[in-house]
Structure formats: C-alpha cells, structure tokens
Image 1 (tube, rainbow, N blue to C red):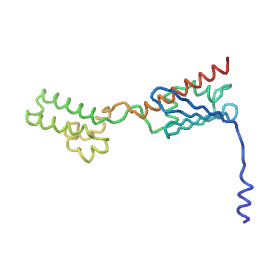
Image 2: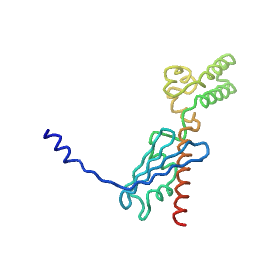
Image 3: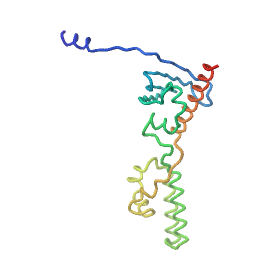
Image 4: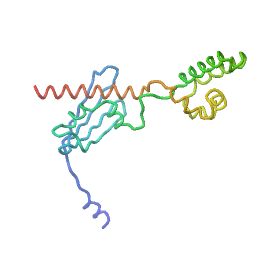
Amino acid sequence: MPTSNKIAEAIKVESSSVTKLVITGATNLDPITVFLEDLAPCKGKITVSCWGKSWTAYWGGMWDGLSIGQFFCELNISYIIGYFDQAINSRQFSGEALANKAKHLVLKERRQFCYGSDEARDLFDEAEDLRESPSIDHLHGAHSVLMTKLFGDEWWHLTSDATEPNPDYAYLERIILAVQQALRQEQHQEAA
C-alpha cells in the first residue's frame, strides 16, 4: 500500500480550456473534428481528426499575440504536413512511371543500336512487368536482373524519379485547407 500512496501524491492534475470545432460540408471530406488548446502565451496544441485518423501538433514557440488557431492559419500547408507526419511525402513510388521510363529507355537504346530488334522486343515486354511493382524494395527481388541490365548496377538511384502524386498527402492537404478555412471563418465571426 505505501507504493500506491506515493503514486497518488506524485500525480499533478491541471485543467485547461479546449475549443472543439466540427467541420462539415468540406468537399469530398468526412466531418473533421479540431481540438485547439492555448496552453500559455506562445504555446499551443492542435489535434485534427477525420475518418478515424488523427494528427496532432504542439508548438512551444508561436508568434507573440497569436492563438493556436491564428498561428495554424499562418503556416504553410507542407510545413504542417511535415509536422503532422514526418514519413509522408508529396510523391510516392510508381510502378507505372517506372515501366514507362524503362520502355522509353529500351526504345532510345534500340535507336542507338545498343540492342538488336529481338533483344529490344524482349526487354520492352519485360519492362511492362514493372508496372505492377509496389515499391523499389519489391524490384530488388523480383526484377533485379532486368533493372541492372537497363539502368546499371546502382539502378535504384536512377529510378528515384519514377513517382506519382501521393493520394495520402493530397488527402491530408485537403483536410488542412478545410481546417484553415474554418478557423479563418471562425475568427472573422468573432471579430464581427
């Protein structure tokens, strides 16, 4: 029992005011819930939730005189996305782009007489199989020989531009835009 008393004595509870917004009607988005918490001058926290996913950020050095909502509206969307999810990029690997790049390379090298017509046809057909590749890692096992033949020993460096827009990034971008629009609308109504 003495241990539980020490734990109970060590717990410190503080309360703060939290503003909750529910945003509906944003084009092609489910309802968005936003929790805003101004913790102290120049310190704030925001949590954004949509369709079962949540993102949160804390800033301990906001610009003087701004609430967390005002500060959030002033930030660049790509900065916010990086703060919410450091692992997400605006572009992602694309097997489709890689297949197109490989086919283009085969045609170019055929025109330069690097390949005979039969070899070029075989490589062109094999390049089509790259279209279904989900990642660079998959290529190491499944298509390593073809990739080395087409792009050289360190082919993964030469294929880094085989990308397409990342739909998860675009989705989060749309959510942030909707939140910023709602916060600006809320601020405008409070000022009126």
